[in-house]
Length: 119
Length: 113
Image 1 (tube, chains in turn yellow, cyan):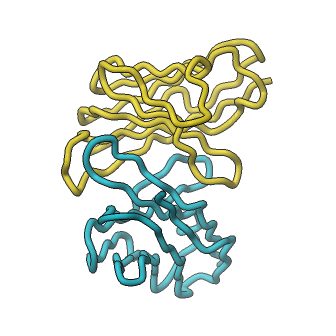
Image 2 (image 1 turned 180 degrees about the vertical axis):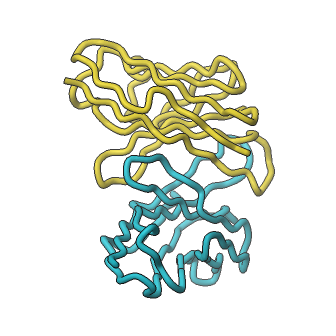
């Protein structure tokens, strides 16, 4: 168990358009989901943490009006890149945690990633 | 703040060679430690984890031991295969509340036949 999917896996869009990326936990409920951005040959940068039914918590330097996050249910979170520009081209990865509780064995399960290319 | 430092890659090994990828961390308290693997064009997969000092995580022939005295979590495998070629990320996280993960920069492993 603990499978996380992302859709689409790859998207190409024109500059100025908006793109929505979905992240789903397929076989468990995820109170908390995380969105990361990975630059070429770099590590993952946490963009925001989203909890079901509440506003996302954005990391410093991440524009919340540009990267809209909605955690509508315990199995779905979406990231919308608004008015995308070429510099937004990147690999976006989501992860989900089974619970936001105090278990020392909580683990994040990662989606396969979405490659966004903005022309 | 918390940080994870990995040895710089790329690491190139011949098939069946012994692998060590060093990882050290800076953190307060007792984080859980993880190794994730990313194959080309894919997301991250959890490879192994350890949640307390002296724990050994193991999976697919890989293993790593949580060493609090040296703040290390080195990844080892006795005999690598071509299929092990990937980028390996060391990471730490705290349980409870918002479980933010701090990643190292990743080490690319290339295994040649």
